[in-house]
Image 1 (cartoon, helix red, strand yellow):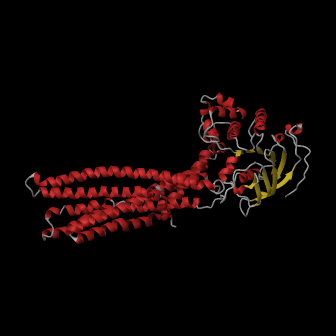
Image 2 (cartoon, one colour):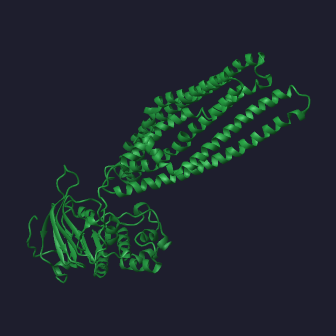
Image 3 (cartoon, one colour):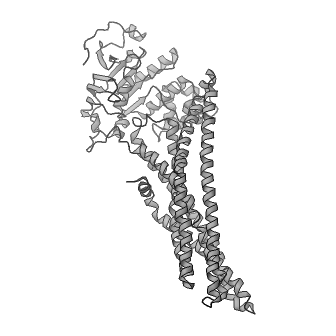
Length: 576
């Protein structure tokens, strides 16, 4: 299916709004044609009659068409803009629902600025698809038929000539405009997306750019792209100006040609002289809906480019497929990993290769190892962000891929290595885990995470804004907020990925004590590349290059573990 037809399918739910807008647009221009024709008739008639009474019908007609045009114009604009806003809202929801199943696996190759451009700028570009691409040609076709019928009533050749000029203005000129606009319209979308990407990089990395004195590089790139964008917009403006100028020229020529043909008909007695002014003015008025068609074809190219960029993204198959017959909620939350293997792409080396792990319900296992050995990858596989290529992950006796992704993520509470905080209040970031939570519940979990005293000292308390990605908070405060959020979720399975990172020693010990109480009865994976917190776990597994090395089950009472030192490590299983 072509991009154009797919875009039509997207706005199909609003077809009645579009139909109403087309009819109102036709009515508005029809009233303009009627007003022009009736005004010309009134002026001509006034020179031939002696009393105003003889002009009463013409005067009433002028008043009617004037009022009708104003009322219809307002209604048409109201309906058109209402429909446009509804379509934009529909497109944004549609696009988000389409890309959500693709995250994060399928979105990783895309720059965040490029994604922002697709979500915002490309969808806003599609606003023109309805208001300037679909509606004008339909309204123009109706107005063309009306004008040709009016002129054809007097003489068929007048209608033929008018139709010829309307086709030149409404078909030939737009096709030429589209051909000229194809390359710059496509370039406009591409350059704008690249400019957005650089803008996001500059804002997010501004501190580092200033620290390393490299802001001039991004400044030069931004200036170059801005100049390129301006040049493209100027080219499109020139094409648009030429189209408008030629459209105005053809409109005037149409009026003059109709007048030139009508004069002999009047002198020959075939047409009453009172209608002589009416004919060319009617012809000129009919071009109101035809002249914008050149611009509509120009917008069509930009819309199709924006549409292709959106479809390019959402047409990618999801990394994780939903099961045809989902497994029910498990009776227990034991976790079994058997010979798990995974690589991010066929050309990459395996991140996990034959990894196995058995964790009974309510058990605790620590996964340790240096950075890059696959600890975070294991988290992504457990949350079904990626699909493993070989082996099994079983939860509660059922393979993980047999659960719906939403059900899997409901069962896990996760503190990730890089927890994202939204640019809103502390309260709202906490309520992400449980929207119905009371203030008392928020205070309880924040006390457990050693965060409440800090929040209480803030002027706005829990209503304090945390800034973009929590930048108004320190690293330790962000981490404790993430811990409080996972405690609020109260999920039966926990994944704590570097949960105590960025905390000072005293706060870390207090948080670990709270976690020790919170983990009771919950199946827990404690992931870390440091020994902190290993004393809370029943067993420790060292993950190295996708290979599993099992270490002695260690008692949490051993002082060497409590101090963060692992001893008496004995390898019992090699690569599995």
